[in-house]
Every structure is written in structure tokens, then in C-alpha cells.
Image 1 (spheres, rainbow, N blue to C red):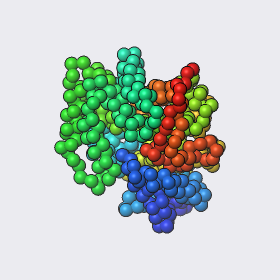
Image 2 (spheres, rainbow, N blue to C red):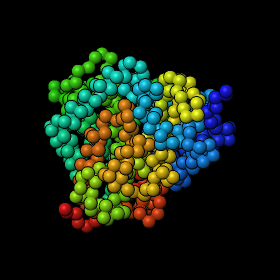
Image 3 (cartoon, one colour):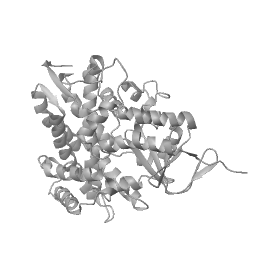
Image 4 (cartoon, rainbow, N blue to C red):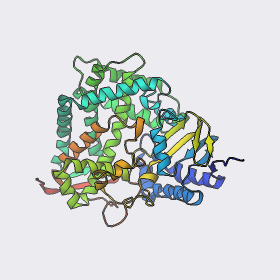
Length: 432
């Protein structure tokens, strides 16, 4: 009896996926967003194009995964929520987060970070990350320092009558440096510059040479904050957490520093959504849990991680009796799953309630902080910081003054240019 093989995309589908799905995302920048490209792709709503290509594949071939070969690399494109859940749940056994392409990109600035650590070293580095982050989260002193950092840095934003992405992002970078490295790093713009230069290199993955001198300088500046007599921020948790020579604490901190930079994008878009919706805005001012749900739904609508990548570590078996060899890339397209109108009645609208009533939590294909063994251990730190920041900003009554499509009257676009949003504050503070 002949065992059926996997569904393979033909050359025409492969070209469509590459041109319509991959190239616009590559132009935006997988690791560091390119503002001009983001403006163009948002105007064209290219994520909607890519989602239509995937939806068409599912319509013609069924919900099972589809094998695609591009430039000699074979990838398994997921099309069903069930397969997405399986891959996330089996990360660490049948699949690894140390995907070849992801490793090539992130190794420019965090070569030993847990996310791209293969093999037995990963478990120890994961335990270190969880212990250091959980220890800080549970420390009232750390929480108070985070609150103070946020409140102090947004005070100038509240004093002005206009808010732009440039002003907001600069303030957020100061907040991130204080939370990750301590207050001593507040004005260390060089450490952010180094990170972003190396992230820009990471956009090119293996096509860009490694700049080892810049990475050494980034690591040395990080170590300087760990060596202070009284380290602050997450650096204090790093110093208090046992580590071996293989743990590479400085490398783990680079991932926190990098991953935290996705937060201002979703926070700024959340502010844009609330500025167009008076009733949700009023509720967000009074209800912190609802405000956190607003942030999570902005991340669902416009995921900062466009693609979750895994590599299979063993031969994997799929419905229909066919197998895929070890070393196959597995591709989980976040905009496709998190805006899947065939499954989610709220796909294209702002719906924070799904994070409060359990619908989003039960659906593993909605994964703004990933899921399973590779879920982000810093989720609580990031969401708490976002809620504190937006609570402070919502003391003013902001309205959008830039052209936008964030209002409730029609489906929200699938590609958003956060850098173009501009706000004006009302004449009075909002109370209550």
C-alpha cells in the first residue's frame, strides 16, 4: 500500500508566497523595523495580501500543512490551529526554537541567548531566565522602581499638547534601559545604538557579516551594569540568580533588551485604538485588567513577531500517514492565525474582551508571547510596564490628528504603521 505524501506547493504557489508574503515582511525588517518600508507596506496593507495567499492554499489543499521549497530550503507552512498548537506544545521535543534562519538573524547580537540555544544547554539557560525574571517580578522593590521609571519618563509627554512616535519611543527607550540595566543606564544611548545597529544587521540574517567588535562593546557595556556595587533593574536579578559558565548571563540580558523593544509598538497602537473609542478608553482608565487586555489585543491585531519559526529535530508524523524529515523548517504566520476570519468572528476588530473571558487564552494559534515550553518568561514584566505607561498617558484625553484607519467603523487594516500616528491632547486632564 502506498502511503500518501505531504501536500507540496507548486512553483506558482511558492513564487506567490515569496513575492507576496515574504518579501514585504523582509522589507519591513524582521528584527528591526525600517520606517520607510513600513510606511509603504502599511499603505498597501501587504499583510492582508499574504493572508489571502495562505487562505487560498488552505481552500485548495485543505487545512493540513503545505511543504514549500524556496532557495533549496524546505519549509512546512502551517494552516490549521490544531497544527499550530501541536508545534508550540512540542517545542523542545520534536521541534526547536533554534531555527536556522532565526539563529542567523539573532546571532548578530545575542549568539548565546536561550531562544536560539540548541541541545542540552537550552534547559539550563531557560531555568536561569525564568528564575531571574520571576525573582524580579516578585520583588516589591523592583516593581516600585519600574513604576517610578515609567512615571518619571512619561511626565514630559504629559506636559506637551502633542505626541509623536519619536518622542514616545525615546521616552520608552529610557524606561527600558532603566528596567533592564537599572537607573544608571538611563542616559546610556550608546548601548541602545549598539543594539539597534546589530539588529539592523540581523534583518539580513546570514547575508550580513558579523560585526564582532560592536557586539563585544555591547556586551562590555552590559557587564558594566552587572559589576556595579548595587545593580538595579533586572541586572540585580541576574546577579542574585546562580549561573554556570555556560549560562552566559550577559547574553540572556541581550534578549530581554531586544524583546522589550517590541512593547512600544503595541503600546502606541493601543493608545491609537483607545483614542478612537471613548467608552473603551474610559473603561481602560478605571480597570487595569481591561487595559492589559487592550494591549494584548493590539498585539493580536498587529503582531510584532510576524513569523514564529521552528525546525524539526526528528522525523515528524502528520495526519494522512506521511512524515517530514528532521531539519525541516516549520512556519507559523502570526498575522494569518491571529486575524483568521474563518475561525475568529472578531478577527478584524478591536475586541479586548476575548482576553478576559478565556477565548483568546484557549486558542493557542493566538500567541503574542508564544506558547508552550518556549513562551516568553518576561510576559509579566512587559505587560505590567505597558499597563503602567498607558495608565499614565490616559490621564490626558488624546485624539488622533494623523490620517488613520483605526476607528471602529470598518475592519481594521492588517498592516499598521505606528510611526505615522500623531496625537493631540485635550484641554484638560481626565479624572477617574
